[in-house]
Image (cartoon, rainbow, N blue to C red; front, top):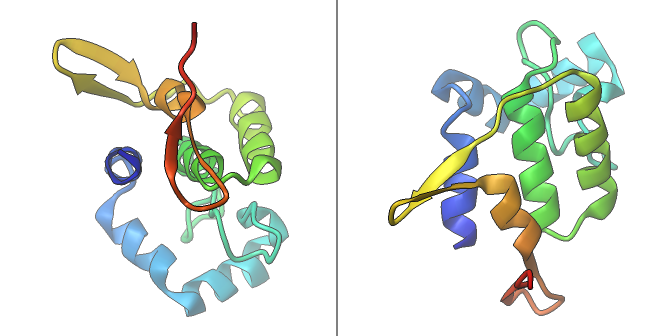
Length: 126
């Protein structure tokens, strides 16, 4: 399930940008050119939220950072991403279809978390 959620969140990011963001030199250049705000992670090299070519915030990167942070149990980054998503007026929401039902990836992420042993666990809403 985790792999599916990450895959769906990543689909919205253009392939060229995905490749750029994998490159450590590009990440270093981004920080030097646009400042520490380009990443939400504590080491300033994880959870990118801006276009590596323009330095502009991208809703799909912010959304993806939120989902990955929630799934990895990083509430500090998840909260930063959520605040940034709202403050930038992002309206994009990713949905996946499960049988005949469309479900928001954020809703699924909120129900699911990974425990300290790395085991997927579901929080069922009653």
